[in-house]
Image (cartoon, rainbow, N blue to C red):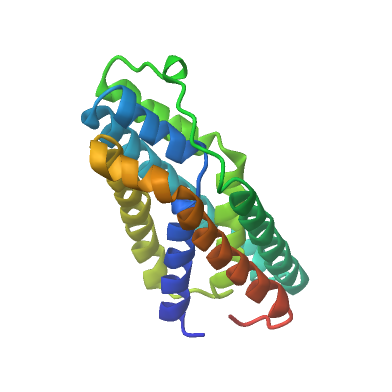
Length: 211
């Protein structure tokens, strides 16, 4: 797979991950619903910067090791695929559960505090770190081109901050919020199927060292 195709696949996988239900989604939606649209947007900005942090760690630290230890590279592909399948099963099982927003748990006084809540939520979530590590280990070539180090962080910021900006805008408006909540089960199940398919592909192609 060409490096450019691998980068696009990574970004698509990270978008699916961002779109899956989780604490980041709930925090952004809760702030947008219970506080203000500005608080929701500030929280989304924090999520985007957190994504850049995880991408930087993965790019600068992980592949120095993977480039010289082939069995570890293959092992991480398998682990990443299994984790994606596990994540998909959790999304599927939770698809029918309604979102619960507890306003008492989130009461930032201003957009600055909302930003830090978004950033700290993203950085403190171990599942986000594992997801990034799994995706990068599974899809990025062992010797990525130099341009990818400059292209990935801003693209990931756009995905993370962009998606959660959409969440903030939707959940601060009555009609889109009602539509999502009505169709939540189907939307979550489609996302779960896509994530599971990617995970299965990674497991089945783990023996192929080149991506």
